[in-house]
Image 1 (tube, rainbow, N blue to C red):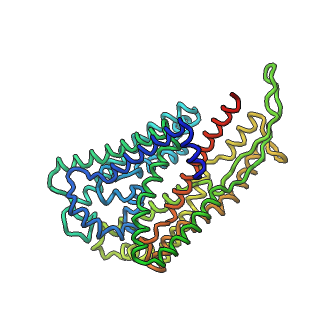
Image 2 (spheres, rainbow, N blue to C red):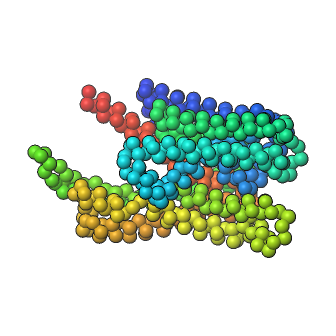
Image 3 (cartoon, rainbow, N blue to C red):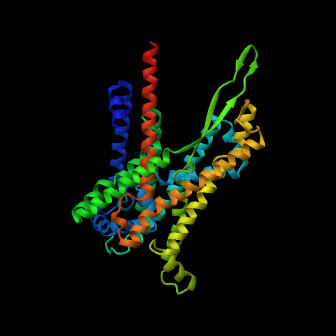
Length: 434
């Protein structure tokens, strides 16, 4: 990785792209610490210090993760990248359900551009809802339940509240723009780079806190973290390559085909999406218990005791099973064996030993199902690490190498390095041809 970055900085055009990407990241982090107008900075800092340790287990823990700690600071970029992630997931699901969106997806680049536009509109709508919800929580004191100080300068000023909602929503729009700038003029996928930035932003402070508290615990955390990173890298790189051959065919006076390639099926074909799905769904019980704290209903009491916190066996089992379910569900809607088999048959491709058409689709489905099983177990086990740490040692908030964080860091890091290496190879080929 270091070698790739060193070679990239020695290449003038790649150096410009890397410096441009770093500049956008710096601007992004500035917006993450810049407070929204109308926030009482001193009171917010005091309440933030009290609530920071419990942020991992409350209702907005996932948004707090993807905002790099900016959510509880009510900064301009407080919502982070979460509205865009949610909108993207919703659009991917709707493509399977709505025929019009499915037709757009098949239109190629033009259709994908239209779907991207719908994603932007939905992101803005979700940003308005989320910013309104968090400002309302801050206004009523529920954002920091254990803090009695007002985090807003004037909680009764409706115009000021609306202004804060507009600024946070505009911040989400700027984040989308910055991500597209990185994709067009920088290195790597812009949105992924911003997600990576927000996740790793909290690592130095968390590791420093652990080191100051207990040096032995710090050593254990680092060893476990390195082991987890190595395991994630190994699984993320693992893939099953299905060999494909294309028969020779005459088109006009030219002969096409006769080549061999493969279909790469990753062990973790679903990525991090199942973890986000499961985490979002399990925040609903926490929301219900927070809204009905004074209720004596038997169901509410059972939810509060078993599903509202992550240290109960029922919560752990439910979280693990939801990840398994959503892994199979997401793989089934993103990879269609029948469609892949039809495209292969259309262009004269076939898998050696497998007849084209339906037998090919059945074979791909069989292989994909067997691959998804270890991938789902891997996602479930990695995601359970911080929850088990909370249940065994009460140290979830002190364990920075959470499953979601590791998956994001390793996945984005590997993809970015691969893109840099591919661009370096292209330039080496150009120099060789000259």
